[in-house]
Length: 233
Length: 407
Picture 1 (cartoon, chains in turn green, cyan):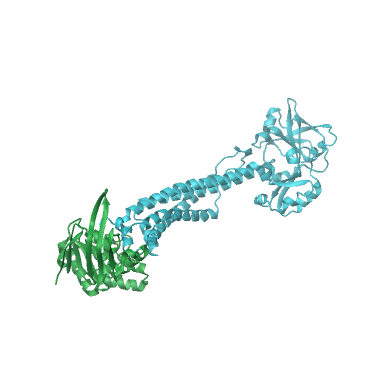
Picture 2: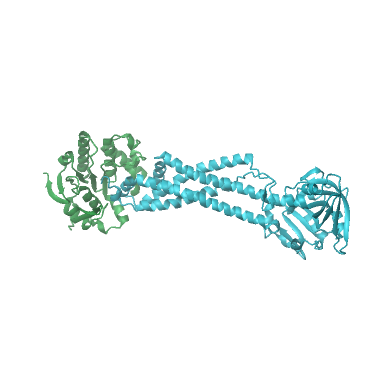
């Protein structure tokens, strides 16, 4: 593995095989991928190509059958469960397809959740929540509960939640799947803007052309393997 | 604080389920409070029925008298014992009694009976013989040949007020037969068959004279200023009045079946607690596991964003605690309401006999502060302990599996 810390994500001969009704499914097969700090990349491919499984493996949400993942120079397979939880909390932000905000917490409480886990003090939390809400154009929505927001607004809260703790990497799984094209475009533009502003690394799994069009790097997966890897100038 | 807030709000995501689970806990706690209140009163009524009707809370007698019941076993140093009791600050009332088996003859029948010689002045302070009179009046002490007979004995021997009855018994020292004519001055109903059919009351002085035992008695029944003292085996009273050949014993020794009944009530209370809590266990487990599986994806997300397994477990335990609080509040109100209602009406077991004791009062459940402190605390801790199982289950959630639907 390289010691160059601009290489924020490295996977080495990554494999994942699981059983589906007794039948082995080779979801990821020997993926070698390096993502540099600050990239705005997308993993694309048809359903079943292994995008989600690869994101799970990269984030440590799932264990590889073979191979290794390094994040910020650390092999996540060598971390204990607690270390991995803390690493995800401090270094990875997640954006999910179905937003997955906690419905009983207000917008502000949802966004500050990770900072609470980090032990950030109340004043600082509030300041950062207000700041990020302004960035995602949701100022004034902090006391609302998620079910009262539109899909696009909820996904922007999810982006704010993912970014507010200032992680190094944002992993977004099909973030536009439940949004209309205009909202998707706006959301992607906003994320691109934040990517440029903060230097955070964004990795999307998607088959949405709107996301693909805006990604700086497009890694195409097919049958669990990297089929192509193109970087835009 | 966040987990507390989250747990409390999660509780009301499915209001119907929370209410049902809360009601289950409430019924458990409410029943526990009510049963405890009922048992307190039931035990008190039983003890009171046994002790205040005639027995007394303690008795002083000659050693061996309780077992043999022979008329020659009289209390030693009777005057000293009586004067000691008069000065004893723990003693509320006391009365001497002379007892002997004998026969009663009326114009129509002859029967073997138990003759009680009682002090007409002291006896009403301790027993309910005077209150049990259904015809005539209690012994006045003015006529030493008055006699009180039980309602059934009066029926068997065809006796009514003013009728003559002859008692025959054996003098203690000489063994001579002695007879005395009495007139029925009162008929009593104790609600107890053995007393109603087999006992008579006469003046203690007359009984002493007939038995020729002098100025003494076979027993002295004692009531304390606080009935609880009768259960205190460390009380100096027992040793003090058990000096020489006398013995002082509590009602718990004289009527061990009542003490056993108290133990049985305690066992019953524990059994009730176990059964009720058993039901509560399954309701809480069911509720928490349903909530867990319903929110599996959400918990997966919490784990994914960095919540440690212990954090997820804590959340589930807090939810169990929040559920317990809802149930406890409902249960305390329910227990209070039902107990107050029944306490207002009373449960009528009067004249019903349990273990040879005829209940003389209604049962009015008794509320105590501890019922609203100890039991809720037990239920709360119990619920938290139950919550550990689903909490451990939740802590073991693998985020990727939990979120399989999307991520």
